[in-house]
Length: 238
Ligand code: NAD
Ligand code: ZN
Ligand code: ZN
Image (tube, rainbow, N blue to C red; front, side, top):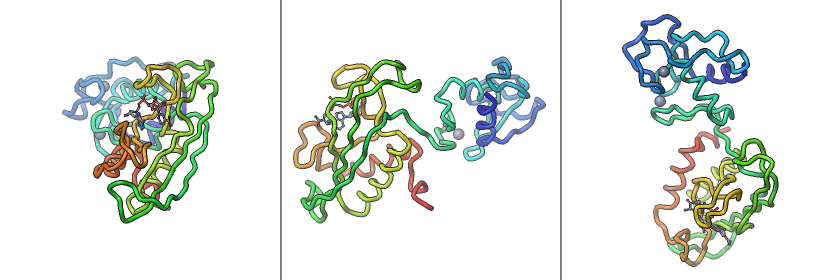
């Protein structure tokens, strides 16, 4: 509704409402900004008031440009969760949140070292999610979802980098980004709680699944997966 337009305006600066304004193209429809958007001005309920077909905008951080009507169409097509990602360079605006169901994240300390990290102990994370009913944000609202393999036990080295990853995983958990409801690529089961692209190590002393130690690149890999969801060290600053 009106909120959609307000949200978009937080992340974009309007360039002009009169064309021709710029030799650049719209990163959504790929047409020149000097041509009007092909999207129609939506009804007031969809937040379309006050946007003319020739209104163009510019993302405040990355500077990519687009038609405001193209932007509104993209936003209304998405999760409408108050965040936006530049379709061109993937810069995230606002706080991206996911659809992880209700559950519990617990953290414990283990004295034993992980393979490949002999000089420190281990952080254990336990995720518990009980079965429930899917909400409007899930693939089949009103239908139940299952939870296989919970509680899930995960391991990090208890060193500086591992503790930083832990803090970022807590942020990702609060933003509902660690799990989602969907079809498991391992089992093919639909309507079940699955990992959501932020890899975890679920084996401590073995590596039968490929999700164990040693893995010298793991912490860097998970940091970049977190960053692609908008969870970075900046989130830890007060
Ligand atoms: P999925 O199969 O849809 O895969 C999603 C992502 O999770 C992929 O990136 C994949 O690489 C990763 N992944 C797959 N297996 C993993 C594992 N064992 N540990 C860590 N990451 C893994 O995801 P899913 O359905 O949520 O989980 C995959 C399978 O792992 C399921 O069958 C689940 O039951 C099982 N699992 C079991 C336990 C257990 O303690 N029994 C714990 C964790 C996962
Ligand atoms: Zn456009
Ligand atoms: Zn961009």
